[in-house]
Length: 244
Image 1 (cartoon, rainbow, N blue to C red):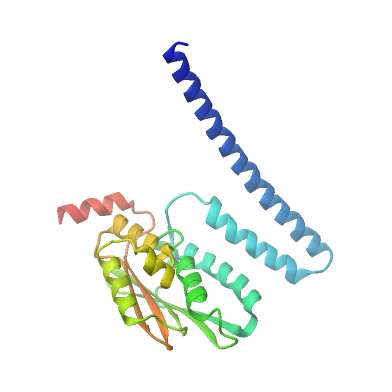
Image 2: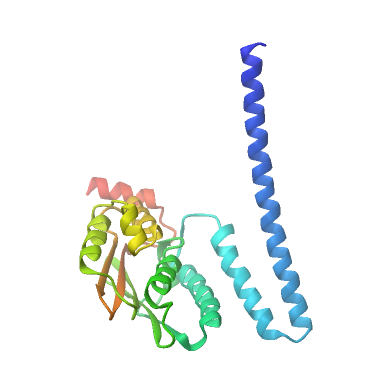
């Protein structure tokens, strides 16, 4: 058989497989959202308003996580997604978890942050810090600003991290390294490293995560970001880093 024909068939099959995979993902996503909307509507008609509200919250959370385009969002968008996530978690845990947000940044919708930064950090705090608590778990988010940066602090009152592990994690963050499999298994999810690396790649290595922790008292993840308008393209910022 002619090799060019074989190559053409191989390419066609590959493209066909990719198209099928893409269409199947689209169908599954639409089916998922349509089903949630139908259940929410039925719950509302039956007077189950709390159930309808929770389904709407769950749908909004997944729409943000899966469907929204772009890697950069506003801090306001990211915080709204976190609020949806915590609403679901507080329904799950009841009064075992308290959640508060304090911000001195008045125009949250104007400043940018990489998409899916806050929720994975808070999820990590719940899973590794306070999930086992029978009561009294706390998650606090504080957002503050300087002339050139936005600082976001995610605090929990969980079990904390051993000093030797904490030092290695922060060293990896500061040097833009991925954690070893051993460290991931011992404490932190790889999601934190992904967040740290995205921030470093987008804005430069001076911007990254840093963790403060004391065993049996709690953990704080500090996120340092440049104070950039959401509309400013990150590659424009990268260009200023290389010229200054």
